[in-house]
Image 1 (cartoon, rainbow, N blue to C red):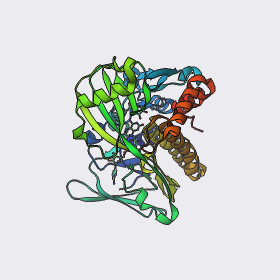
Image 2: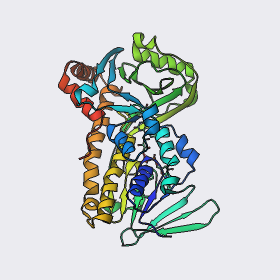
Image 3: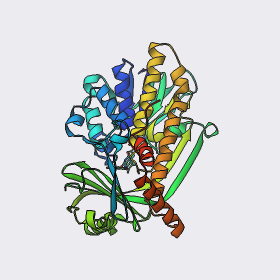
Image 4: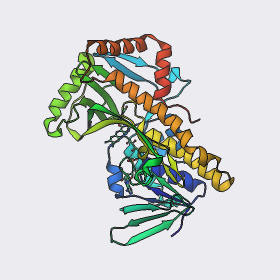
Length: 392
Ligand code: FAD
Ligand code: DHB
């Protein structure tokens, strides 16, 4: 088999890239380790930046997004139960975010794949990449039948998340890794209850961080900061709701509508960047190259902006006979990645309770939040990062 671009991983990075390439007539194949139900069933991100929304429109894949997505022009911060609003739209010349779950995005990308000639191999196991430092890389995999297949290609793109095979296929001598592990996790639930507010609430409380988010007018997504070694079975729904309401404060807490959770999970928090994002004919995109803590909802959006940059570079290569975009990919993508890493790290640092925090550290957090509350320039800085920096 032969193709122009072999894509490993059918998450947001892999599927956006496959659709962008198909639109411009570039042949590609996506190799995914799991099946569609598994990928579509993973509860992950919930907030889309303008760049991601624009891209879905550009691909003609925004019908359900337009119908069901909740456009948010603002967000709320809360300090020890006292809420204040940030008018993101007013502060950023009309930019907004859209609440639309990653699962819905994946559904839309998968539904349109067949009719647009986007080829996906499900259950592709034991994927290996060879010859990426030469002129004709080969990707091999095994299917469920046990049979082995291979595809020769011009380029390989690793969109296979943080534990994939692509990053590990790059020699350690040419990669640098940067990492920060946070001393806490997020315990999240989904419940079929109306959200407590029309817009999100990021809450800093003495007892730790809490986030009130949503998936629809009838479905809420709530998170609370927890210890990294916390056990899910120790968190009954009742205990979760009680803790959430404490952290949101008496006024908001009293308005929270409780109900049985139908999803509950703990996610660790980590910042990670691998540089560069290209090694010869192998490119990394999305979580394969970088991880951010979820605070600020940057993870999926970064995956999408990486492949938007990369797709442009491939189009230049195939239609304009220029490798300038390919040669610039890593530095252009990393410039944006580091800004999102900084923002997620900073937003985490002002909203979470750190185990070694003393009275001084806590006062610094409170002063920072009070400063944001009272300063429009500070709010504008937060807002322009939150809605997403433009693709440069
Ligand atoms: P992924 O979505 O990880 O997709 C990678 C794909 O590659 C997967 O389908 C995987 O099965 C496949 N794959 C892996 N290895 C191989 C292999 N060897 N061969 C073939 N296929 C392979 N972000 C937010 O913005 N907000 C959130 O609330 C949020 N919550 C999250 C919760 C969790 C538990 C996790 C893990 C992430 C969360 N994120 C969140 C981050 C966000 O979901 C990711 O940044 C986003 O999914 C990245 O997309 P991706 O395509 O790069 O990687
Ligand atoms: C969600 C997750 C985030 O990390 C965030 O900052 C906002 C919303 C969510 O899952 O809804």
